[in-house]
Image 1: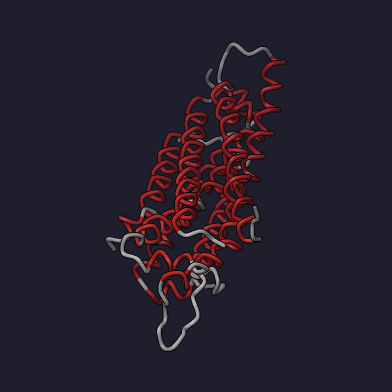
Image 2: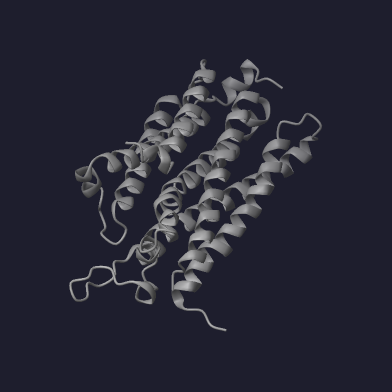
Length: 184
Length: 112
C-alpha cells in the first residue's frame, strides 16, 4: 500500500479539508438556525455565540485552504500538457495516465468529465470561501444583530446554503473526476 | 425579535450588509470573468497570470480583488450607518449570488 506525493496532497484536499469543512458546516448551520431562538438564556446565548464563531471561522479557513490548494497546487497537475512526441500532440491510452485532463479528453465517453465536471468545479468552488468569510464576519462581529434581525439572519442563511452547495458540487465532482482520471 | 432603535444606535447594521453585498459582488465578478473568458480568447489570455493554472489564476485573483475592494469601500461608507433599505441590499445580494451560480454553470456559459 503506497501513495505518491500527488495522491497524498489530493487526499488532503478532498478527504481531510473537505470532510472537516462538512463537519464544521453542519455545526455552523445548527448554531445559525438557533441564534434567533427566544428560548435561549443569556448564558446559553453567549456559549452559542462562542461555538458558532469557532465553527464558522474553522469552516472559512478550511474552505480557503481547500480552494487555494486545489487551484494553485493540484489543478496544474491536472491540466499539465503531455509532451509532444513524433509530431503527435496527444498520445493515447496509458501514455496519458499522468495527464488527467488530456486522458479525459482523449475518449468521447469521458470528455464531459472535463468539459462539464471540471469546468463547473474549478469555478463554482471559488464562491464558497468568499461567502463563508462574509457569514463568519457577520456572525462574529454583528452577532447580536443576527439574533434580533430576521432579514439579516435569513440572508446570512441563504449565503451559507449557497456556500455549502458550491463546496458540495466542487467536492462531489472532484471525487468523481479523480476516480475517472486520478491525479498521480 | 426585531431590532429596536437603541440596538441600531449601539450597533449599526451597515458593516453586516457591507460584508454581505461585497461577498455577492465578489461572487458575481467570478461569474462575469468566467463568461468573459469564454466569449473572448484575448480576455482569457489576459487572465492567464500564471501559465500552469491558466486563466483560472486571473479569474480567481480578479474575483478576490473585486470582493476585497468592494468590502473596503462599502465598509468605509457604511460602518457607522444604519441601512434603512436593508431589504433592497438583501435582494441585490441574493440576485448577484444567483447570477454568479448561473454564470459559472457550464451549460449556460457554453451558450455564449
